[in-house]
Amino acid sequence: AQPKAPAHPKPAANTPAQAPAKPAAAPPPPVPKAGGRRRHALLALSFVVMVLAPILVSAWYLWTRAQDQYASYVGFSVRTEEVGSAIELLGGITELSGSSSSDTDILYKFLQSQELVASVDAALDLRAIWARADPEVDPVFAYDPPGTIEDLVDHWSRKVAIYYDSGSGLLDLRVLAFDPNEATSIAHLIFAESSEMINALSALAREDAISYARDELEQAVERLRAARVALNSFRTRAQIVDPTIDTQGQMGLVTTLQAQLADALIEVDLLRETTRPGDPRITQGELRILVIERRIEEERRKVGLGGGVSGDGSVFADLVGEYESLVVDLEFAQQSYVAALATFDAARNEARRQSRYLAAHVRPTLAERAEYPQRGFLLGLIGLFSFLAWSISALVAYSLRDRR
Image (cartoon, rainbow, N blue to C red; front, side, top):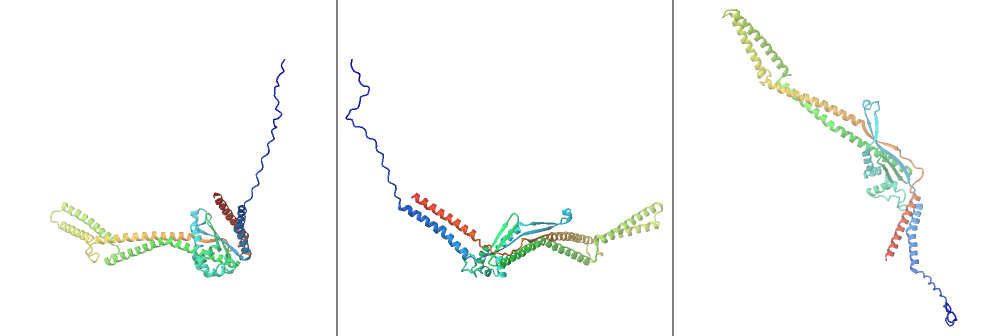
């Protein structure tokens, strides 16, 4: 039997064994560049220049050079007093008080006006008050005299702060000065000038309210005077007080004569029926009828022509028409005068019932310690804005570098 072959042949003796793989060598550490250190140094230098230096300079100035300032506070509002009758208000409540927003807006503008600044400066010498701290020592908060009125108005906006609540109509002021008494004096004078301005506005509004009614009343008085003069001139010229009364008398006489004429006609008719023709009574009756008819015609002619009634030959009917026209003018003038007088009285009473005045809810205060300048607050603001400016500048610089 033949021997079986091995399943797996053995490797030859002379085949070399495989060597294990060696690990890869690690890369050398990066060498720091000199440009990175320079950028960090520039960033730190910019932080010192833009943040630390302004803070240190501001702190030095605020605590060593800035002078203490005292604040005086005053608050007021424009009120409108409306007084009505007890009947209208049902129960005797006769006074209602409210604020006038339009007047407050006017006062708000007045408090910032050059007119007020000039008036206060003329009374208190604002240039000397706000230059009491040496401008060479404290050039930021002190006023540098003399300056123009525009410079003083600009400095006024820094020393007089105005807070206006348009909803309630309240005005609050803060006045700064280097002396507490001077700050209070400025606040008192501002309140006095504002009150005087509101009183002037109230007087102007009152005059406007009654000026139209006064003009109407003057015109009505002049019309009434002219109507009376015209009527008196007519009576003097015609020598008749009231032509209508004379006309009524004349017409009454004509009516009486017509009644007598009717009686005479009836009497003559009866005589003709009862007596023979040629009776002297009939002749007398006819003569009486003729006389009455002539008299009626004469009276009617007087009423129509007025040959001797007015004394100047004027037509009596025309005189009556002219007189009635003058009477109508007089009555119209009287009614116009009464209406104008009632309107004037109502307008004057209404103007008196509505008056403006300045009501102070905070009287000018006198400070006992200096509250300004607010050194800590100002230093914090300077530091915050300096840091924000430095941060934005750094971000812009890095973004420009990355784009390159």
